[in-house]
Length: 318
Ligand code: ZN
Image 1 (tube, helix red, strand yellow):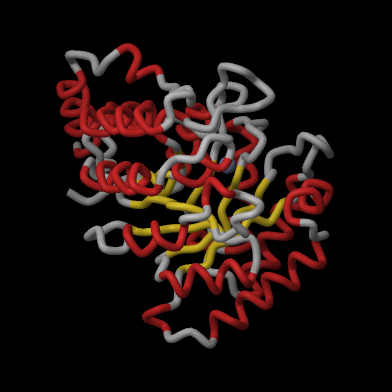
Image 2 (image 1 turned 60 degrees about the vertical axis):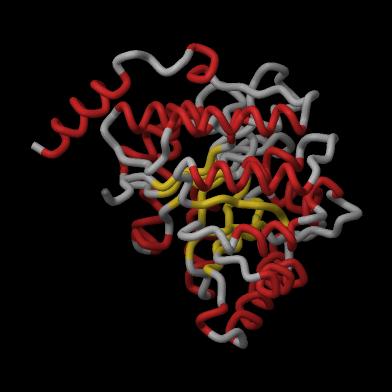
């Protein structure tokens, strides 16, 4: 059965980078393997940042090498710059994502680069990729970070996000992604920005969103993304990582709840929900201090889950 919505698990990167505890490499491998076996089609396994900055992710090259041996799995990694991209290519990552903060203040704080410097770095990345044989060249996506609002600047004008997306596509990036880094977005805003980017760049240049659940709007935003035709949604197992500004609020949207939502609606994710929930044991055993979120794992898979899926699938195919 073809996958209707592709879930990209970002827990090993986005989740772990915001925890101070370091997960042992063996446990990360067990997590990645178990989640692949549960049917997850894509996993962002780490970030090619200097280990001094993020010791939690220092084993990213090993994890990419490990994960690319898992059959059928798309192995993604984050890169902050050309040097990171070179590392990702050397390790054999299938897909790389470079975050470009739409808020210039956030960009300066996060990557120490203003927008002009970011464009120059992206241009260097594109020129480098040209030199890589096509069969070893990863898909290159620029994530439009803080696209829905910034914790420092506040409003991020939609026109700016759309204009930068258009510029990046013209420069030659394969795709842009919409990131609600700060969990400030709402569904109407997501629809406007995505539609604006599609009008200016073409539908194939934006197929994925990265959502945070800081204000509890994550699944509402995900549902809007699905309704308008977004194909890939990032989420993290147990919403791991949390949100330092809002205790009790998870970081990324919770993969388990997202799978429950989509599958109940009759949309195929390829993921076995029961097997996915079991993966939590690996994470909590390796990170006893980390809090795992999620309503579905807490309440349990309801008895009518299979019936709900079947009923929705039948209705969709009519
Ligand atoms: Zn994020």
